[in-house]
Length: 228
Image (cartoon, rainbow, N blue to C red; front, top):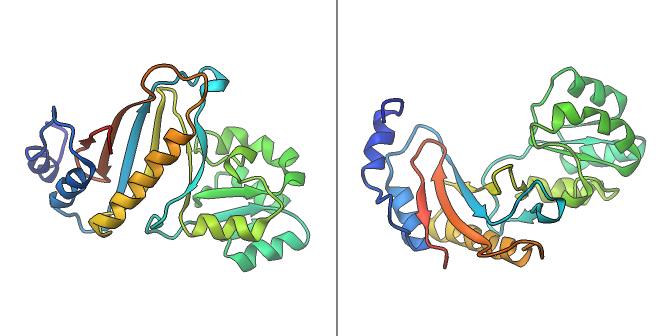
């Protein structure tokens, strides 16, 4: 615990590392940790039995959490013509064509989700080296390449999240805030777990969901029993 804060160390003492907590208990334990001065995000990590090196085992998509994520999601839209105005009316923080492409290419990344119309993807694709590492590259599979700009912006602003397995086969997503009630956090977590299980790739072998952990921005993790 040498490189952890005193608050983290104190919270860590209350967690049984070898124990798998039932979901409601895991959330209760998380809520007992000493609070910070800000409303921390509650994150969940699911370790899946997939090898992301194989395209048929990549788990990715979008999901609308029933209780939202408790934060203002900043959405930008790459579009042209009338769709720029539609994006702005729907609540996009920025919308545009070449001007927005240049701004992002120069390093501006002050947004959470990027959406693009299909006709802009030829140009947006050139931003792969910028947006790819940030997990913000628009993709048809994640619902961020669409002509239905107004609906897409609205959904992401209201709590729709994107997810994709990392190189280790983990899915890492926000599931709410520490200020949420226990019931709302449990509902968000349960809903996402069920969604992932329903979307198990046919090529995945063995026990699909191997481990589940929840934590807040500045806290230790709590392991959740797989029968969550």
